[in-house]
Image (tube, rainbow, N blue to C red; front, side):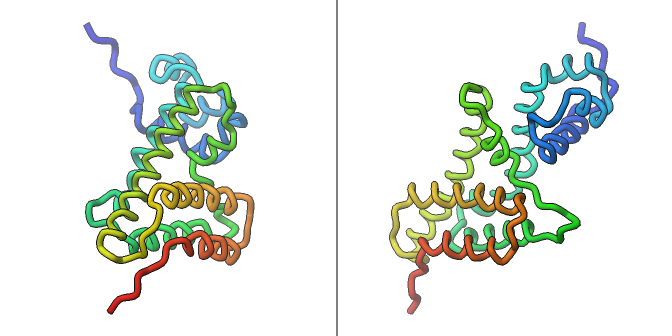
Length: 200
């Protein structure tokens, strides 16, 4: 026989936990704050997700499912190219340049890297998994761009890693309060390694 159905929607409460972790970070988010924000009991949390770290791992997957998938859709597609890389970063820059009344957030994956303890194997593996997805999306777009003659030939893997690092760095810079124009300057220099091929 199956257990009693839960009195809450798992995805809804997981989204609430993800928002809290994303806003405050793993270390600064107490178990009681999670329970209050999620609106469930301690036992319900343990039954559904396990302990705090297991909940955080589930939140990272939820973030990848909702946020990361939406961000990477164009870059992961078969038609991705140079224009998609530029559009991706311009959209990211605009989002991070929102008014001061709406403080920008670093990517949850990038934030996890900052807080990550070297000995935490489970978190390190989870972050690596999602970082690799970002890297592969950039590599896909770069490969297509080179094959179609949109950009000059370059070292695909190193440049894809460079773009992955740029994405995380910009998010952390924005969260620290760096001026939007300085974000734009950093992005312009970061993208200068990709040289569009002259047409005609």
